[in-house]
Image (cartoon, rainbow, N blue to C red; front, side, top):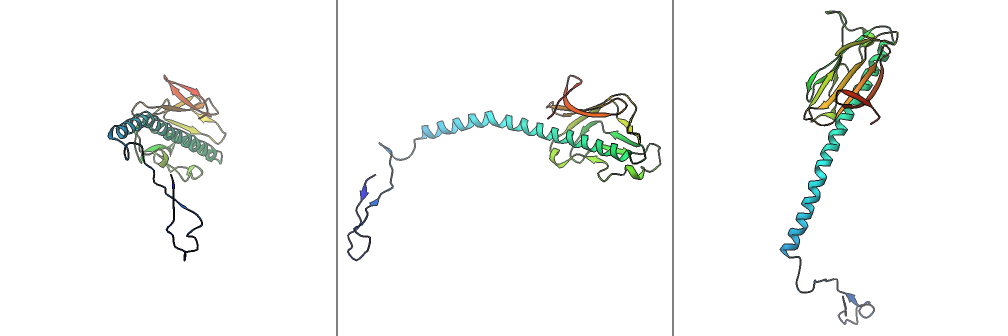
Length: 200
């Protein structure tokens, strides 16, 4: 890069003060990149994308599944709080394949034909597949699909309830466990028919 002298113009105030620097760069022996160099760069970018995209897809699926599991856990806690206002609230968990717009769980009447008690009528009943979890299919399999929260803060039946939520295409799986008579709620990773309790 060599300075190029300005045109000599005595009338111009900057004509003799500073030289102009040319910003042209050239590669020795030619201009631009060869086809082989461009193909090598494209191949490297393709390998990097091939390694990164599956990991990104798996991470997105994991986040969708976590959002659905945490949302259902909070919904169950909301139903439990509603029951403490004076009426037993019966919950039905959907089983099988759930797709966009599908019902995950709902509060139902404990007696056929009777309306749901007013204290159990929470705004988001039934609990539908959340927007953050849409775009994927899920398999839900509870060990008990219908149970109740009572005004005394207990759960009926008193047996443990395990709700397993998995991607329909053999992706990751999560679980919610309601333990014993009090129905203490815990979340974890589902593995081989059991729930490994953890934070996620």
